[in-house]
Image 1 (cartoon, rainbow, N blue to C red):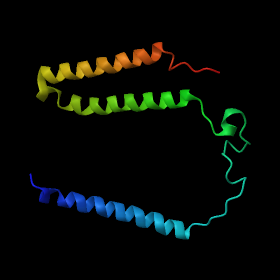
Image 2: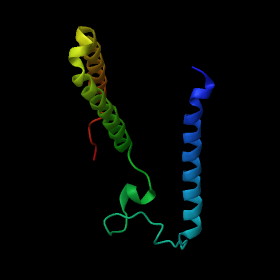
Image 3: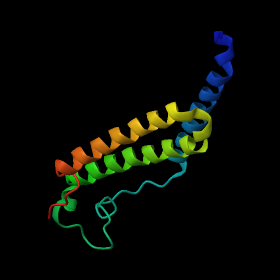
Length: 121
């Protein structure tokens, strides 16, 4: 493969960057800017924020659960194409996916045993 074969990809990336930059620039010119303290407060169901949310800090459990959600969503994303071509890849592909699932289950068990899924009040 030569570098000239990647030229259309580079043009596409440059075009995307140009469109995004132009969009952000034009929107910064056209949008109203009127910040005031009430507008900059976090919105929480129409009520003034109280507790930990008032300081803008969230507990670590939110982030741990979000990371675990992403990990298991990626697992599901890999399972669908694997299931479609299962007959074509044979026993080797089956065993490789089995190892993949076992490794994810080990990670899930580790997170569970460490208490990452426990919600503390």
